[in-house]
Image (cartoon, rainbow, N blue to C red; front, side):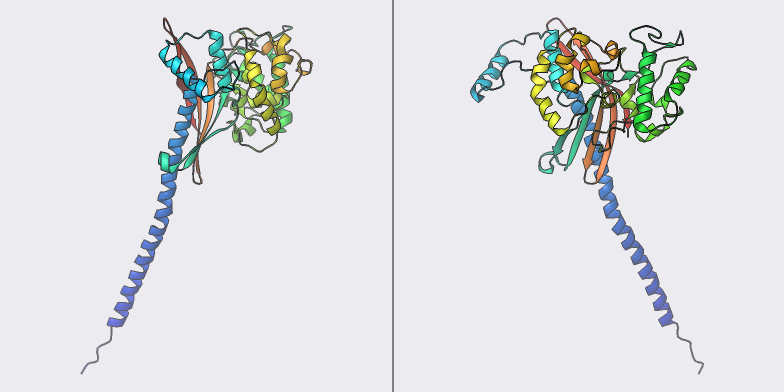
Length: 367
């Protein structure tokens, strides 16, 4: 008889090898899929929270809490009676001064600082945190208000007061020093404006200029940054949505650092909370910044009027009617953080017996 070569055992071994390879591949894909889907889920939840943070900021700007000018120590019974009386009585039109006080009392304790809102799974369906920080665009330098594009000159150039060229030379020197930039920033800055024929759409247009490239790593203000005062943020210094003058009540943190105002330590923040009520009472329709700096703004910024950069007071707005704000909003779920930066506009509506506000999104960045 002719002897047959065995093929069953090799065939079985080959089939087992294929099965092992397939099983290993399926296991690896399965073991990666579960954590990957968890990250995707957290990312979407974090995105929802970041978007919700923008809505929280819009709500604060549209309907600020009423400023209580009187004493704060009232009983619960009297508070309840007061609320009931307010519901029964017709709403009175608030004066412009009262509306300004309401807005300032909403903003002053938290401007340029984190506001954190923990989100609980048993209540909201998601476990995470919303973090927002509001800033005022009118507390930053508006690139479109400092230069006359028709005359090719800085606004106020050559005048004894309100010369934007002089103040910007100082600002650029401070930025160079604090961020250790070797290039001449003002030279690049001035050249950029002289070659331009139209208004600026966004402060990020400064990035290609010599000396401004380090700002590519620090575009958006980060309240949680533990870095030293050398850290400045481009969109926290300059804006395309501000006003002709700086709003002294609501200066951005980077502008404060440039002019050597105190940023506020933990103890200073506690003191700030204690003085807010008295400062808000001093808010007037028109404030003479030069005369009232020491009474109002020295407690706020920790710097006397005589120590201000020479002529700086000419660039402060004596009125208080801020309209454009920015918000940094973080949505945090697990180890995932989604970040948004939005420009918000506060719009006033006036009817016969009521003044009310809504808030619109002017610009929106994922960061």
